[in-house]
Image (cartoon, rainbow, N blue to C red; front, side):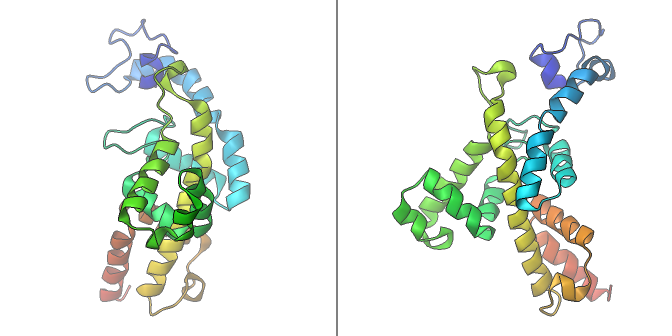
Length: 224
């Protein structure tokens, strides 16, 4: 809402505070003034989210809710240099490229020669891995000074598929954590539900595999 007011897509001049809180967010008056425009803005991605969900297996409502929580559907740079609709970090890019080999094979040739890509992410050397991580972050950054509202919607739309593949990578890593910290049993063998496995995946996405592992260790120590 604040970004739509700031970019003059919404007129909040009737608000005594101009539609803003002191910290730059939208005030209650600003939110009300922007309500219809916010609904249109956040729902414009629905069609692509649904198609990406069908192609990757990531639930569409989970993907959309991730964008709502992470960026409030504004695909630029966040306060901690997290980038895009799903607020990708360099660590997040590393997870996406490491734990989703099909995605790595798809993305790498877009920015590197086939010889280096052929080495695989793990064996291409840290300099190449860093270059690839930063290229992936750049690919989901829809900030554009010359675009309407300062957002490149074509790049934002492209990024939806990237974040779905990143979630699949985190699902793979979360599955490995489950295996490592539960007597080498798979999620299915442990009776972990489909919904809970996605919750573990979101923990992995937001806090990292180390935090997920610590949670399993704590549960084991308490016989839970």
